[in-house]
Image 1 (cartoon, rainbow, N blue to C red):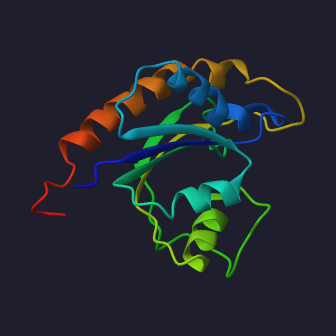
Image 2 (cartoon, rainbow, N blue to C red; image 1 turned 45 degrees about the vertical axis):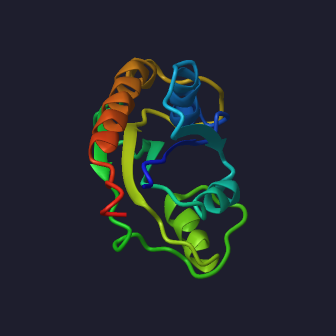
Length: 163
């Protein structure tokens, strides 16, 4: 039975709100998590994430900044559609774009697990450290969403008969 879940925060802390994923992971890491949950702040280490995804996972929870669609600080939780991502072919050692990470994973012979994105619309990704006020205010809701997802994912984990 595989009910392992990887919670992966991604983003660049030197680009304002792009540091949303690492900031959320700082809060998640301070919690007591089940032994079958690994929570990692990958920052901008896309290749590292791709290699870790070669392991068998029931699901991936990807925590990331999302483009501003007019409502900075808005939290979105959705399942990623690996079929509609436009990955580039081959290995991409210097990119943290999720499509590039999944393309690298495919090039390494792996398959992405079910992926749920917990993302926040950014206000600014200009050079500088620290989250904008609306994005920083969303961090507790993101942590709560992750905890809810983990409970749901473990409740739906395959039984030994299902594999």
